[in-house]
Amino acid sequence: MRVPLLRALNFAVLAGGMTTTASDLSRPLGEPRLEHPTLCSLGVYWIIHGDDNQNGFIGLEYRKAGSSPWRTGARLFRVERRAHLMERSGSDLEVPDDGWLFAGSALLLEPATAYELRLTLEDPDGGKATGTLRASTRSEPLVSTTARVRHVVPGSGGGTGTERDPFRGLAAAQKAAAVGDLFLLGAGVYEGTWTISHSGTPGQPIGWRGQSAGTAIIDAQGHGDTRPGQGISASGSHDVWFEGHTIQNAIHGAVFHDAARIVVRHCHIRRVAYGLTATRNTQGTAADHFIDHTARVSHGQVSEVPPSLGFLNTDWRSALPALTQDGPAL
Picture 1 (cartoon, rainbow, N blue to C red):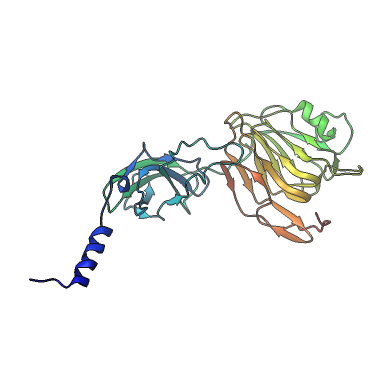
Picture 2: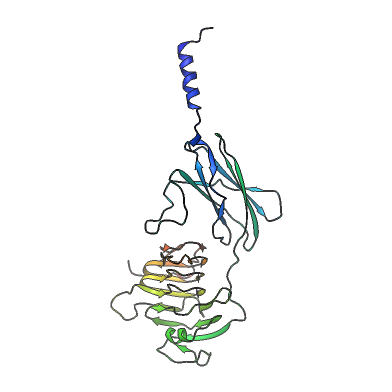
């Protein structure tokens, strides 16, 4: 039987297109890994070798620990090669030049809940693998009801921290700060950069809370001619919480290099170039920050996430546009 030349050529092209090479086969490099959990999501990644023709994928399923059935999540995203590398610090992940990083998240989960995640690598060219992980979402950080309460008002020194004899100024309060303390800042303007020199511990943070939302104003510039670099300087600190403050008149509203477990809640940041900055992690300890209902406000407009730099492993929640303030152009 004679086969027409055109049909034979088409068959040859199709057959050639189905050729599979060893480099097209997908195989995992190690086990899938978890990212730091957040309140409502669990991030995962898996490094894969091969799959040069990029037709492999990784499916994600999840469920509450011990329950069934599995729920289907979005497939993991194939990260462009070398896109995971940061310009200055590179990356802690070792992804070979001929490998692929796949990453994704199970979303809209319940806080403080244990989950199981099942990842399935599939490739039409061959190479199937499954990995199961167990993790829990974070609980919302809350100040203990038994924390020692101390009082602060604007001033230049003195005071014992009682309601009748509050610390006068943040520097005086900072000197007396101890693990587990909760400082209530009275209404008024606290001038100058606020430098944090004392840290709490996990479960016993040092909290700094405005007694009335937005009325404790951290004014870094004060009566100076120029804005200083930082409104709050808390680099190297850990387990320090800031709640209900207005932070203004600085290049950076607050800086948290090499810091851990910082909470910023119900704060408003204005007249700054950057809201929050945390771009250094030289000790590998920067993790578990919690940014909640904090906004940068300018000209009456609220940004749900402040223009910020860095912040690895941080739980962000939406801004609360309850207090808007007009400010000068930056």
